[in-house]
Structures are given as C-alpha cells and as structure tokens.
Length: 267
Image (cartoon, rainbow, N blue to C red):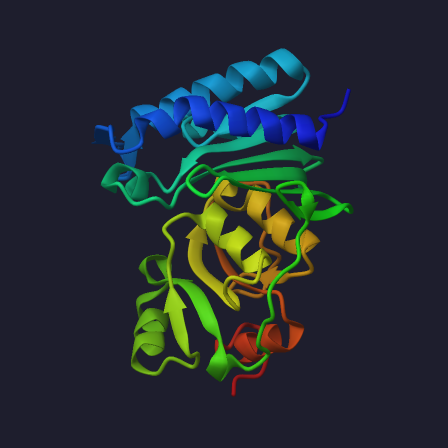
C-alpha cells in the first residue's frame, strides 16, 4: 500500500516525542569527520524511524543523513522509491539548547519528492505535503500570512555561512531588503517561508535531506525556487544545492534580477 500521509505524520510525531524531546538539553555532542555535530538524539531518531519505515513499507529503500556517502550513493543509484530522512535538522541548535530543530522525511519516487513531512517538536507543528495535493499545517490546508512584493520591505531568511564570500559581503554592505533572520534548521526555514513567516529564502548549499521535504512543501504552498545558478533546486543527488525561494512571484523576479541569477539581466 502507498504511504498514507496522516499515518506517516503520526509516526514522525510519535517517534520525535519519544526520541528527541526527552533528550533536549540533556545532550552530549561529538564531531563528525566533516566537522558537523552529531548527538545521541540524531542516531536514536534515525534508528527508530528506519525500523518503523522498514516494518510498514519494506519495499521502499532508506537514505539518511547519518549514512555513509557510499551507502547514500548506492540508494540513489537503485532508482527505487526511497525514504530521505534528516533525523535531526538543526543539531547545533539542539546541542546548544536553542529550541529550533526539526525532523524532515520525504518519499522520493522516480527521483522526485512525492510527499514530505517536517515536524517541529518545540512548537508541536507538523507541516506536510503530497505532490499535487497541496501543503498542510497540522492536517489543515496551509494559509500563509500577508506578504510583500517589494524587496526593500521584505524580511528574508538568509544563511550567510554558505553563500560565496563576495555575495555575502555584498548583502552585508548594501542589503537590498529590510531585514534578515536565520533559524539554523533548513527544514523549518522552508516551512516558515511556506507559511508566510518570512518573505524570501536564500541559502548557499543544502544537501538532499535538507531540501527534499521542504522544497515540496513550499511548492505545494504556491512558492517558487531556483538555485543561484538559475537551475531547478531539487536534484536526486547528495551534492550541495543553493536556493533562492519566495511565495510571491513579483518578489521572486526582483530577487533574481538583484542577485544577477543567470538568465536575468542585473539591475
């Protein structure tokens, strides 16, 4: 049977409440080989969801941020339906006691996200989407707040750390927008943009598990996204992908022009 989105959201919520919430502010972190943090909570959430998904859908493969690059590549090469999991997005926040972290789970079919679930344990919010079926917050159709079409008035979600040095310096020296924020959880940033809690999103390098569910949720909420190179954001590979995203078409075009994205004439 194909996955039922309500059953899946319940599974993610239940597992997060068991494996993540009790460990928050009681965590010891270590460093992975790439310098990023890893906690017991990452591994516990990964293990629990992997077991549950394999039990309920044994025909669907599994890829997680916590797997080795070789194992990830093998999963992607199979061409079979595939779960894509980030068991704890925002590990640095989690380890520091900052209540901004999430779980992100997507189902990839024929190399594209077919459904996605992102759960925020601290706010008890669960965002979800099914391709062609719209985006939801806690099971109800997502209704974003009012948004601006003027870049000079816009509040952006911007991750400066992964932008090129030249672009980051340009935005700091002469910001074309009103203000910016950074949550430290890519999955939540996609969702907050989809919900109108920000006017645009700019990120220099996401991995597959950072964007699989979130990009679908934004698209199903009526948003649009491209890379800084003018390419489609989602690609079924683990290499980093940059992101420019908005819900407002006029603001999107203004951003593309301002940032000199290929195919657009710079202002």
